[in-house]
Image (tube, rainbow, N blue to C red):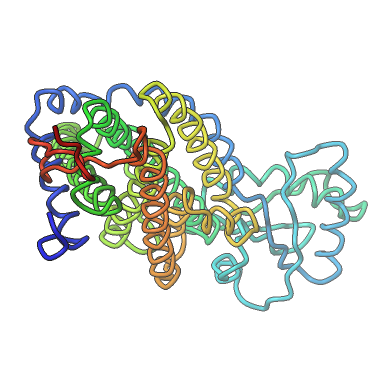
Length: 412
């Protein structure tokens, strides 16, 4: 194959992608692979521990005190005196100078109040959703009794002012959606990304990858393989989604419903698909790089284990920062390529801003290209230059009929 007939990188990547997609999709092994989602259930159970911790952190304890200045100060001081004895059973009180109604204070953006205490020390009133009223009525009565004068009863009656929801309640609900999205994204990536490595191991063992690399640019080979594996993954996800939809129709109202994300379900699902694609390409390109660094099939399998464990760590990093948006840890997880899809999907559930997602997707796409280039370079240096003469092997793009080695041939 001379330079005039050589395929461009995009055309070569398309040929490799079509070849791998057909070979895997119509294989018997892929049919059995579709049963794979039954096995990650164990991983979901193990991840439940950190999920419970995140949910406990998501339930805010901040209560606004909208009383007269003297009464509000007395409430805050009484809470400080009781805290060493009572501990975490008490809410965190914050005096507010707002003159708005308690229901409006409860919905103030950026405050994240779970309840608002108004009235007087003698007759406190609590405005909150019903669950928060039931949770905080006793502690508020205790604090008011500690803050009140001697002629006030020991535990004043707290008047309930229930409202439909609050900023804190909405935030807590959206965190549940963010957790569910992150866990589903992680399970799908861990389940499907392994196909990239298994395909590379097989073709490296029978020298097909070397034939492809001699015929077309190596980065085109890697990119084509990634696109093919991504297409196969979407086929598997579509099959599982149809089964899941059938189960949901049969279950009806018995299944729990997740709260609506900040961006709405259509945009959230769209971004979820985009972040799965980017996360899959990032992890797959890393697996291909590992394949280029390894000299044998056993080394490929050995080196892939640290990457799998590292993926668990970056998932837990993104999951633990859900409740602290804007914190250094959350920003780091959004920028670090391997954890960025998880962190940004959680943002899609909690924030309605769109520009961070455009920036994150562009950054992740750039990292995919860099990983592919680096993996292709490693592969060429460690595999294609192996042997005594350092000669590559040339053959057809489909790897069926390898030609003679490139280089001067000895006659006679």
